[in-house]
Length: 371
Image (cartoon, rainbow, N blue to C red; front, side, top):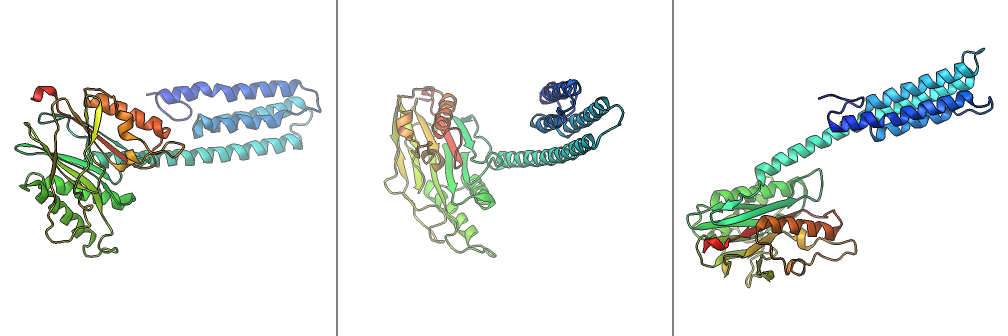
């Protein structure tokens, strides 16, 4: 691909090449007017505006080109205005000032581009980590159709402490959605640990309560492992673990301090609150613990929404939380993809385009054909 004076390829380089005509035209206009102006009027200092505006659309080479052109123009103005003296002290000072300003701007652009490359590398690494730790759910999980989305609060970090995973069993689908206490790389590590443990154990643990007990032990052991600076209870993860049968039957659920699922039927949302919620994972005793498994209906034609508190605690500019059930009441989208797209747009409108916390949104659809 061809590259412009700013060294960028593609459409952005062509746009920068077109915009560079603005400072060049400014230099030409100022030079002509200054040469034709009366002797006591000096417009040469205005030339510094040309290299000053170039970094807004150009890179180091474009800025260096415009700065050099401004220095040449100032030299020509000095020679034409005072032919008997090559350059006056005033013109020499103006030329020196242009050289200093131009050099500083070029250095600034070099540092800016280096920083931009570093941020691009960070985004690439975070996206790669997300694809490994939290890949999008398959569009089909047995008879279920799915759509999933991870919204990161920080643009440079596409992954945080929110997590989700799904696994197929011989009779249905097991799904976990959770949120790690805290932020940063520690939260990412804890999320990766739990997702990995779920993927390994979801096929092997016979019952849902045994699976959740195993996950609790994994989190507890990790937070109290050898060499840890923190103590017991430093790490905990809220989570909801579901077992959805392929053919009829009720969905089985263990809730560990996580926001409840919402089932949408004919535009009417129902919040599936646990009657006996368990503590978050990592806060239970290291020994065996019994978990209460609860059930709820999920009929053909229903949509189920799983999410993290980044959704329900999202605030608008006035500080009002996102009213989830109120906003989705009346939505009759019969496709999980369409519902998720509408849900995302509505949430981002509510917060004014920027989330303060990471958010996971998962929509599960049991098609009517699966009766």
